[in-house]
Image (cartoon, rainbow, N blue to C red; front, side):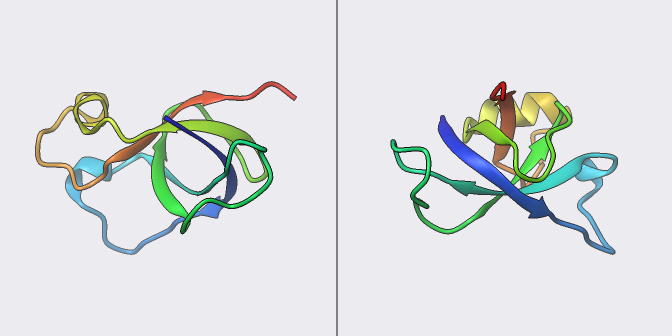
Length: 86
């Protein structure tokens, strides 16, 4: 699990069939201080409705993400599993 800030959304004209209907977020992971960027931004699916600027908890649990989208063939690995209260 990683804490991150939503910095935008990802759009595409062609998507893998398992991602149809899913909102894709661009998330910048943060270090323990909650402010310093940690690595490159990631793309995560969002079942919870997070928006730009929200602090989120994302998971790289591929098995959980595959179960969420209902396919073992999905190319997505990261998913939003929590939104931090303001």
